[in-house]
Amino acid sequence: MSNTVRDIIEHQADTRPEASFLVSPDAGLQMNYRQLQDSATEIEGHLADLGLQKGDKVAFLMSNGLWTAKLFLGIMYSGCITLPLNAVSGNDQLGYVIEHSDCRLIFVEDSLKQKYQTVFDNIPAQITIVQTSRDHGPQWPDTETDSRFESTDIIEQDNALLIYTSGTTGRPKGVILSHRAVIAGGRNTTLAHDLEPGDRALCVLQLYHINGQMVTVMGPLVSGGSVVMPEKFSVKEFWGLIDEWQCSWFSVVPTIIAYLLEQAERLAEKPCHATGRPQLRFGRSASAPLSPDMHRQFEQQFAVPIVETMGLTETAAQILSNPMPPAVPKYGSPGYAVGNEAMIIDELGKERNRGEPGELMIRGDNVMKEYYKNPQATAEAIREDGWLHTGDLAYQDEAGYFFITGRLKEIIIKGGENIAPREIDEALYQHAAVLEAAAFPVPDHNYGQEILACVALKPGTSCSAEELRAFCVEKLGKFKAPRSISFMDELPKGPSGKIQRLKLAEAVSTP
Image (cartoon, rainbow, N blue to C red; front, side):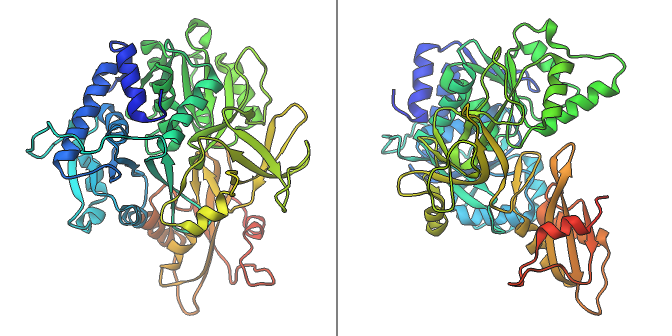
């Protein structure tokens, strides 16, 4: 079987056509593998009728639903490149991604188009906008749908997915993943968690995030299993969905684990204990470090094994994983390499011995092809021998488990989302009263890390913290805006004049 999304969909449609692939519980809709292939073929026909060709970029701005998943897979099936747009972006970032990506078409649901009306009012005329319901599909223009692309030959080296992720600079970088990498992301998830056709995932992470895409869509697709996909995560509905649809596993981030624990502590009766759920094999945590205390507390409260893992956008998610139950995990470690190679290197690029700290490196079919239109960043990230610099400081113990100790890059990880501090800095610098600005992370029980910022105002100006925060919400969106902003006469700097973020966390008391 070839490593393309098209081949995988056709293989599953041929071998298990009537088997369930996706359930949309909010709309009461289901889709089997034959229907998945039919919808992918339909999408290809409409894209061809609209003048698109193999390799064109097609975006969607939608919350989770049946058609969100259909478009995510169907665009890649056609030979076009899928571009998920982040529905919690600020206006500036969303506008930048649309412009930088060179996308030809955007599927957008009405509520999100209204949310970003300013962005859509300024979209170039050459980009086609198709109004789309997440569960009932696009309002296709009146065209024939018998077309197919002139060249539908897709090979594993062809580009399949373009997804933007925050880097060390203020602008997000576009990660190009080939069909081989996308399939490897699903295959590595299958290997890490022993997935079989009888397994059913609960997907509560949005499809604009690499975790939701690769782990709980590509994982079931490659393994021949199925996925239940509500519109969004709900504390109240989480366990009920697992019961109603007999899910055998779920993928979450530490923030969700914290919310589920908080609910259990708040309710007089302790719901959700897994002793009555024999089909539920495990839960999976990724996208941010999971506190060992929270890990143990969750397993004790719900009797559900949690498998801590690690993934990156640049590696189609899955890179490291703890072993599956009944093996005992190593709390505080995201595990060992599964489906790819991993090593620790020193400053000169030489592999470290076990127990010695250095940078985590990854090599495998799942590694990205490049950063879109950014050859310098690509050359800095990927060595000639195929090893990817992750930017994570780590060490490997004698048993082969990796432990992440910090980051080389200044990335804030909030609720599993990577946020570049400089992106927040630049938003603050756009305010007329701001002279100096720097954002930095502080520990947070729910999100793993929360965002604070310090600013120094220009002489003779005045501005409140509330005004600056509202300014950031407009520029960046509520999720990336600092929780609080403190004022200083001058921000601390090093000998070179660079603002020292670590000293800000020490100088400012956390609210």
